[in-house]
Image (cartoon, rainbow, N blue to C red):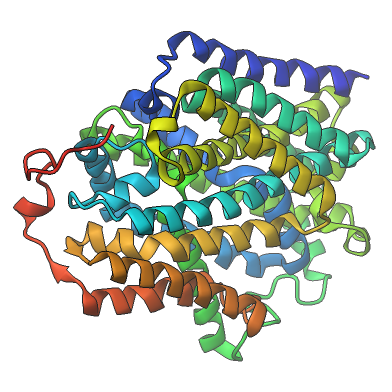
Length: 483
C-alpha cells in the first residue's frame, strides 16, 4: 500500500507540472510543437536527455547488461561519444535553420534547409516518422507495463494504459511545452531513483570489492569481449564499438530528441544546453550499467523469465516500500518523457508534413496526438516484444532515414530532391535488410551501414554551398518561409 501511495503521489506531481504548462499555451502550431522556441538551456538539455534515456534505459539497457555483463560498457561509451560527435556540428546549425525556415517540424526544417520545398521527400519522411515513432512509443508504453508488473504484480496492461492516459492528458493541454516541463521533473526523479538503487545494491554486496568478487565467479561476466561478435578478437570488438558509436550519432536523426534543441531560446545557448545534456547523460548511463550488472547478483534466475524486469524486481528486494514507489515512478517518468515526445513528433509529422497545412488547426493537432497515443497503446497491448529490440529497430530506422541528409546539410552541402529521396530510401532499406535479411544486427548495429551508405552516395552527388549562402534566411533569398 505504501509503495502504491508513493508511486501515485509522485506521478500526480508530474501530471500537475504538465497541466500547469497549459497556462502558457498560445494555440499556434509553433507553440504546440516548438514551445515558441523559448526554452531555457538547462531545461532543453534535461528534457533532451530525459527523452533520450526513456524506458529503454530503465528496462532495455539494464536487461541487456544483466545478460551481457561488463562488455555492455562499450555500448555506453560508444553511444555517448557518438552522440557528442553529432552534437558538435549539427545541433547549432539545426537550431539556426529552424529560426530561418519558420517551420514547426523536424522534417519541415530539413526540407526547407536551403529555401527549397522538397514536398515529395517531406511526405515520404512523414510516413516513415508516423510508422516508426508510433512503434517507438509502443515500446515505451510497454516498458511502463513491465515496471508495474515487476513491482506491484499488476497486469502489465494496467501500467500501459496508465502511461498512455497521463501522456494523453498533458500533451493535449500543453503540447511540447508540457512535455519539456514534465521532462525536467522526470529527469530529477529518474536520477534519484537510479542513484538510490545503485547505492543500496552496492552496499548489499559489500561494496565494489565484494561486487567484483561475485562477478568474477560468473563465467565470462567480466570479459570485455562480447561472445557474439561478428569477427573474433580485437577487430570484432572495434566493429562492435563503432556500431554503438553510430547508435549514439543516430540521435541527430531522432525527431523527438532534436526538437528539444530546435525549441531552445537562443542559438548562442546551445553550449549550455549540451553541458546539461552530457553531464546528466554520463552519470545516469554509468549508474544504469552498474545497476544492470548488480541485478545479476541479486536475481540470478531472472534470465529464464525476463531480464528486462531486473530493475523493478531488485527494487522490491532491496528497498523499503516508499522508495520502491520512487523507483517505479522513476521508470514511469522515463517512459512518459519519451512517449509524449514521440506522439507529439508523430502528430507534427501528420498535421504539418503529411496533410495540407490549411487543415492544421488546434483541434486537429490535438486530435492527431490522441490518435497516435491510442495506436501506440494498441500496439503495446498486442505485442510481446523486447523493449530493447523494438527501440533499437525504431531508432536505427529513423537515424538511417534522416541523419545522412542532416549531416550533409550541417557540413554545408546540398542535394536535389531526387537525391534526397534516394538517400532516405537507401538508408532505411539498408538498415532493415541488415537486421531482417542478414541478421547481423546483434554484432553490428544496423544504423552503421544504414547511415554510411546514403551518406557516401549523397556526398558524391551533393555540391558545396558557401557559408554565406548556407546561412542566408529563406526570406532574404527570395523564398517565403512557411509558418
